[in-house]
Length: 203
Length: 203
Image (cartoon, rainbow over all chains, first blue to last red; front, side, top):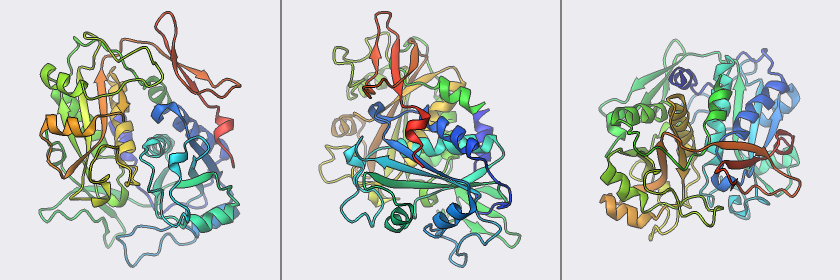
């Protein structure tokens, strides 16, 4: 059931870093994105894969983790992702992806939904394989671009962190106060409030 | 296998209109989106469901279909979707979703990927149930807003057309010319060129 897979596919931020993910697996995951819908069938997304410790470390330092966990700077060495898939927008295919001259901000002039579709397909494929990950939008884009020597035609849209999850994530109802901030309890369990179905279906 | 479901979940534009979809099914599909990732867990998406002929007809007239099929104005009566899920952005939750004062254009100032994630979850759920659909971004947004008497706080992001598919869709490799435009052959089969895995993995 797709519901089981979607429920299993939580956002994980701590991993068994020693469990490597083969590049072949990453290619299989990107193939799921390749077969997914694309607006006007343009297919402007390109992908950079990483499963080697050195390249992983290079990517890691440009990522922001778990904005609501103010006392947690991100996963410690040993609990970091063992792989990444970077989702790029190829502006030679779709110029609208360009987010502005300085690229300090995330892509702000692009109305597309291809990157979300691709990310979900990849993460569901990961969940099916007993892996998990996190869609990261907080990226030092210009620095990561330089570190990867990425040509100007490619816009960094999202970074998907992947690994074998080392934490428990539990879905909770949103409380009466309406707070949607996730939190981590004393046992290290990560709690994620989700709005009710009745509150999001409005007609 | 998620790959089977993703492969099965093509963009369909002609349906057995007489096969109704119950509102309960639409709610189950939205529940899949509800359980999917959301940037900063804000969950700004809201949903309008339609499975009644009158409401369906009202929505249909504000949609653009298959931009590359110049001689085809969209599905004829009898082959139209039997349901819709309209994905809205609640700007009281995330003001960045607002696309500008006149709203004549699609959301252009929003960098989010929640709508793509939600759309893919919903369409995979539909495929699992033997249904299919199409993510429609070409929407007369201001007219549809008025027709639905939609409050200003909601931005129309995408319309998902749903039904029991009445057409065959085949994936093709992109030819040497690089053309990604889909086409329909003499037998009415819809062909969709997809880029190769090797051409989209660039690092």
